[in-house]
Image (tube, rainbow, N blue to C red; front, side, top):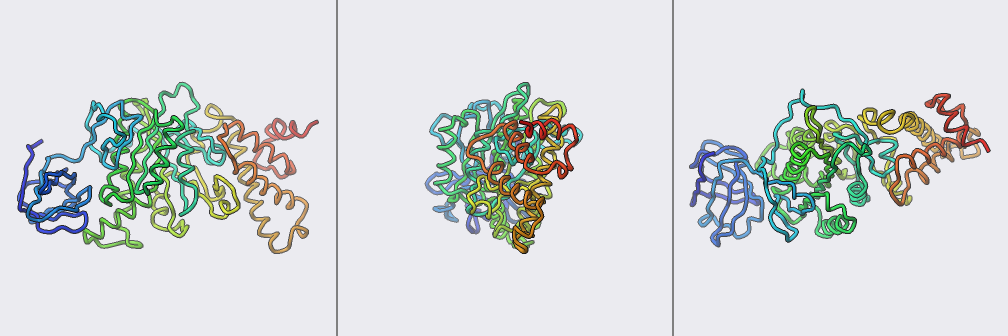
Length: 462
């Protein structure tokens, strides 16, 4: 690494979070810089663009008080790094990795680049092992697997913040031999009261003891918002691939991240793509999501649950659309269920976990878990179809079997989807078997005769 270089009287323009300089030093893209004002206050930044004549610096804090004449820029000669160590658990950080809990600095044992290192695909292990979240619609119907990326698609005003805290409190790996479990919770561009809710909820529950909490406020600069998940994922990678822990990363709200990406892209004068978002948003999101996984030769793993709010509840919007291409499924929250008082308002039919088969069934959860999930899904799908039919012909116009499915759909939402407290997988499965007991056995096409004999007929017998 070359020595620090400091320049002054080189600033030519200041626009929002961007500082434009005449290029007088040999510097590289994404190199870290320190921007010092006339009072000696130092702000962190990085080189966002450069050509033969100019440098563009993203300032990661407010640019208020900076002047063209008195601003000095120090080039650090390396990309942004995050100092990490075992005691990052139980600590709170801002969006650029600075301690904000009033405690001492982290005792660093390593300094890691925040953009991470690409994982050799040949070194990746297939995601496996069931992570129990205590939420029936996830554990039973759309299971989360260690090493997976499973986003939550929500909407403005829906209780995704409450769901995020629940997952952080309740998630664990069922296999007692799996190793240490840790959490990294990332709040991106949230209001102060929401950040305070996250902080107090984690402290009151005791979950903060095994959690690193990163809080990026809505009042922070958009450039800082782009780095918050990168600092958090660097901490998660250290815990997973150096400390050997199994780490679950919950990131909310990724829509705020994408909006910041659009804002910064526009300030650079880049050509916009769909709905004004930059054309490289797909690859940018991939640099975050693809940091999840597990290694063949390592003992740790990194699992992600990113949460995003769909603008206008539009699942085809570029943010959820591109996220769905990169990740392995989605959990969709529904406004109609929320209005009906159902919590968590998970819309089961469009929800999906593509890796569920790799972490459930015999040897992972229960041998009958996949078949039960498939049968519940099929029965609920028919119930939804019958509801549409009933809205036309009325309940009396339905066959007796269709009326049974109509009742099944109501009970499915009231008894399985709705829950006031955490449930074990066994409790969720028990509710599922009880619900299927209300349907004719001739309609349970996804279950084997053995499964019907073991779980349905036994319950029906006096």
